[in-house]
Image (tube, rainbow over all chains, first blue to last red):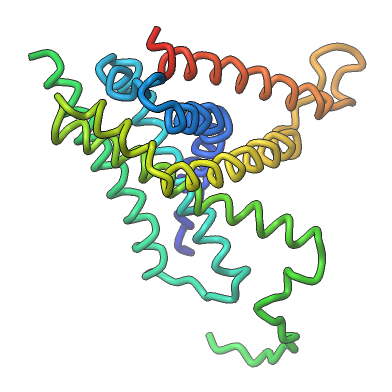
Amino acid sequence: MPARSNEPPFWGLFGFGGMVIAFAFPALLICMIIAGFGDGHTTFHFTEAMSHWWGAGAIFLIIFGAAFHGVHRIYHSFHDLKIHTGRVHHIILYGTAFCITTAALTAISIYYFKSFQ
Amino acid sequence: MKSYRKPYIREVSRSWWMSDPFYIKYMVREATAVLNLIVSIELLVFCLIAAIDPNNAERTISDLIQSPAIIILNIIALIAAMYHAITWFNLMPKAVRIFQPYPPQGTRLIPAGFYIIMLWCITLLASAIIALVLIFAV
């Protein structure tokens, strides 16, 4: 029996992440730029959003989706740049996305449960 | 099993995509992934700041996004994210192929424009919510 490809779940995450980026990133970056130019008058209420369950969840999904979307596209672009990908590239790239996701989940949980105290 | 095929493989240079605007646009689209990944790391850094020092996090993050390097990065990332959104939404009707639920049934696909307009409407709604939460703190 031939080995089954592990592509479908990664492609699924790529699709999910692509959607999340397209929906959220332009507005998120515009808010960051506006807050960046406004010296103190407009604040970036990132931590306030993190203290609500819906804000914490949304931020986690955005980081998780964008990380896996990014590495998947980079992984497949290696072929276009004449870099032959193997197991090592796969582990490094998707491992990076996994680390980003885990770190985000940990940090968001710590902040969220601290804000109750 | 050993293969005895010796197919002729034409040499392709590493800069193959520079010759045609269509390929350049394709590579630019693929390159947006790098910036999207950087932004996701940027958001992770904000989360880490909040977890490590919850009381001063708001101030630290505000100072961080006011630094010129981060503003320049954000502007480039915004252009990349917009290009990603445009290409992603234009790609959607090619990936999702559903027949019209109204007559003539089973013969015509839902027009591409429908998906694209719906996706932009969702983006607009999501953007309004994000702006209300992050800038106006509603």
